[in-house]
Image (cartoon, rainbow, N blue to C red; front, side, top):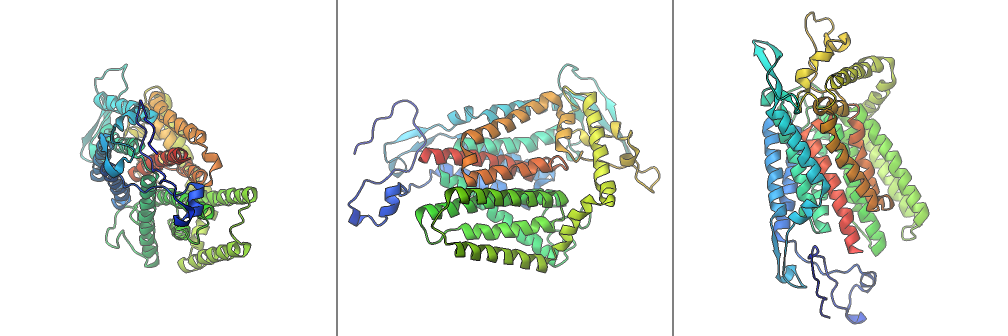
Length: 518
């Protein structure tokens, strides 16, 4: 049967059904009847290269100690820009790559229709303007430093001139630029569902290996990362992350991807009446990731994970009651559930997870309120005072640690160190990403970020994710770091920021490609 002539824009390549054959020659008659059998086409070399670069980028970030150092952030920006170049490079499809006829695909046209590309470009331009127009310079004399005002263009957004290694607008441009470039590359360059799932699977596998490393460190009472690197606050590191709350937020993010893939493969196995599927493998990785979240002692991450677990159980229960799949016997379901609970209980006993549960109880105690919440509430108020001083354009990206003492000194509890005369606290972050973004970027700088978030959420809803359990579970999980950001600073960690942006982009692309197949 001759394919119809398509005029105008050439669509993205899709797998094509093979010509129908007599039933006795078709080994997969049932799948063919459902339309499940499709000709397997290899990935285009450029798309394969994009998948490899994206996997290397996303796997590199956590192994580079959370990419908190300038060298890791520079490499991240380079990998992101490299992925963007590979993604928009024109592709020629011919031979087995184009059964319906040769054509040239221009992915850049899709990039131009991707709103976060323009909104992110606007935000990066805003940061660049702040970097080029500093209103203050960090001056030093021996162990002392202060901010000295300098001449600048007052009607333009301004920033603070400070060393790159101490944090400034150029460094923030490097961090955000890497996240923006990789997310845009994935949105423009991925044309096959298998590419999306390959990246997600690689991220989950990499996160599970990191989690196993973290569990081994806890079991052996390691005193440093890789048992050798001792840096930062003792007892605060988990796996390769120096800060326990960053570890908790990162592993929560990887866990929700594992849950979504587990649900997708489970439902596919039901639909195809397959005897086995990779779903149990993802379930096992989910248990490992959940264990390391509790072992990280990140109170907020543990609380969010418990809430997510309750939500997932409710969603799956509602789905099962509404769809009533008859392919699984209740005894089998009960056996699997009992086995999973046994594994969790055994892990809790062996790894002494009750200490992690005690951390959650600590939050509601009077001591926890005094030493954990009250200082952060005061820091949040001091950050808001900073925002009110320059609400329109902010103080400059990456300027928080330099300008925070201006309002911090108004709150003695977070300014003076107790029992250490003349010593003050140094706050590098506000422990609330939203307040810190407003203080650094002002309303004008925060608007593009808010627009990206709103577009992503509305796009996800329009793609029908609320009706698809795998997509819904992943979409719901993406709100964990957003909630965590109210009490800490996960998005000022390069590994979490880049991974979050890319997972949401992959989720949207996954849903789009699912619709294309229907």
